[in-house]
Length: 206
Image (cartoon, rainbow, N blue to C red):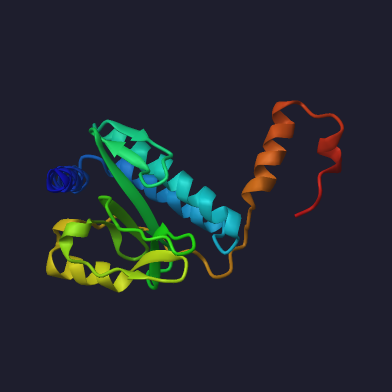
């Protein structure tokens, strides 16, 4: 049963790859790349809370891209799965530096965890990659997570570029001119929605 899930996930990834590389959806891809560029440049993931917001926004944007090219994609917001594409669930992970470790699963205390999900990796200067636990990719445990190194993903796509969609995933800027904080923007947006007449004029500076 598990192998069937991975087989179907691989089939879907290859379908997505073929459609995106066909040249029929250049505008869709352009919008997706432009949105990610703005997201990463404005919400610096060096700020811890922004990491969750950027991850969630990436999931929503990719879901929109898939829906725009004919797939049925749902945003799941589950602990281990992020999107469902044509009835198959995927995890999504990102790395906006192009190197280092990617956290697959957080670990609490002496908890034992295993990687079980078909996973899409969004990696700067590489693209969107697919991998799953049946593809003989090394993972390792740290004190608080099960991780995979970007190097392992790179080696996999060197062996076979079937698992790479070469969409540009930008690197996060080292010194962003515009740095936003998600909680600040949410609070300000809420005050705007309720048509605040008092608090909005006493909003703290960033």
